[in-house]
Image 1: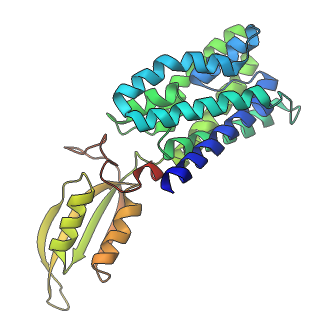
Image 2: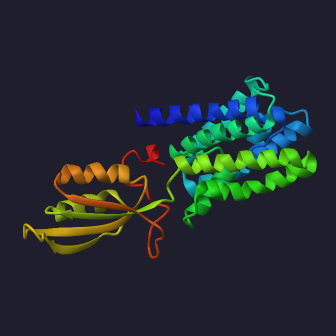
Image 3: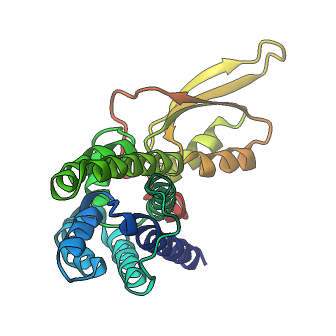
Length: 285
């Protein structure tokens, strides 16, 4: 059921991209970013549909992702690219509004929602999404901001080929897309977790079995009750919180748990294996 749910979300997100491209962005020659934007440029200059270009240009990027990000991720990405490409073939290219600014804003929001949920459910739209995810494994950089930087290249290309006014609309659309993606995909956000519990060994065992995280354990004593307790401290990702919180509650409903956002982490914090042990990890990606 988890797999079916994930596939449905990726399908709907990819379909939303087709709607955004053909009904908001392409009619005004407002481009999306990265390889999708390049596919749009080719489709506007040559008599070949953007969906065909999208498939051809994504092949080398998906091969790289297969080697670095794993089979499941790339299969989801291929599925997403296929659904987006097919939807762009059948959804008519038509203007919802004559206002290019409104189209760039709403098109950017729709693309951001689609991309955000596709990535969160362990897939991608190919292109710069794959490159951005590879880079975020090495650096704690917001994915939307990183992809926005990579996509700026498309803006300059569109400015030279078309007009700089359309290039500015494209920049606005890409920027809005990046903001929305970062609202949905929050993997880069790290949280400090402190647990004060009388069942320290049980909580520690479960956390170590299900998370790729180091844990610091110290002895504590309740100032009012005088009871001996264990204090566990760790740093987790935002997605792992959805799993950690019910796990602790199940073991010790009376545990005191403090969670706060962490600005920066130095040291051996694993970025690439965050979800390998967590059940349903693809649903939290």
